[in-house]
Image (cartoon, rainbow over all chains, first blue to last red):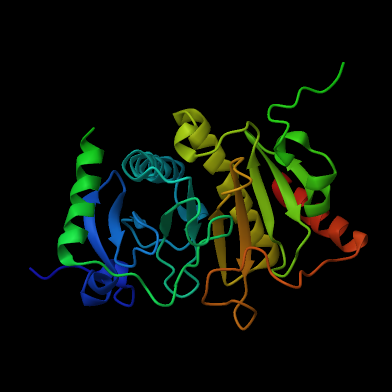
Length: 146
Length: 146
């Protein structure tokens, strides 16, 4: 049976190469999926994407809203414990890729963009080796078990 | 009796001139306060600030987390109904002003920064007349009554 894609023009729904070029799935959460962002300008940067194609927060029902931010909060705690940033930044943009997803970006004192909003699409991007991505995925998965 | 300030180095706690130079209180929500941002580069831009001095989302207990995002979602719906943006953007940064607050930024197609993350501190800023701010505050307060 072929896979049903909720919104075939959305790479979060399609889950194909476009998504895989940008991020790596790390875990399924209650109502969302955790992805490690391939650009690691800020170590530990990741994405929590809601599992259904929804554009705006207020389109979630109350239960979904609660569970989505429980997922986000759990990942925020995990990032804080694993990477020890000075502060976490959080962003939902999606003017063009409007599937509800939140960027979670650990910020480090004396490091780039400290004291400012993180740059969403930095140039150049900071890519890692496959082994280093696997290590981050493992650290996140282990943190979620605690 | 003098006012008790939870964190005297935080302008969200102090509620003095530093805050008033940046934003205008529009409404008290369940666990947060809605402020209209004085920079209106994106019409309707506002801030939802948690009422207690907390740095990170995961420091909220489950009930506070639920209520905070109910407040955010209610304001998002209001902004969508009143200003009819193409998309809403949402950001929590606060590396330096770490009191939990979320920026809600309506974005408009064919207008500035469409398709990118909003610029948090634009130069120059777009200020309005007192009458225009009052009109926005009134529109938001009316929207919250609906």
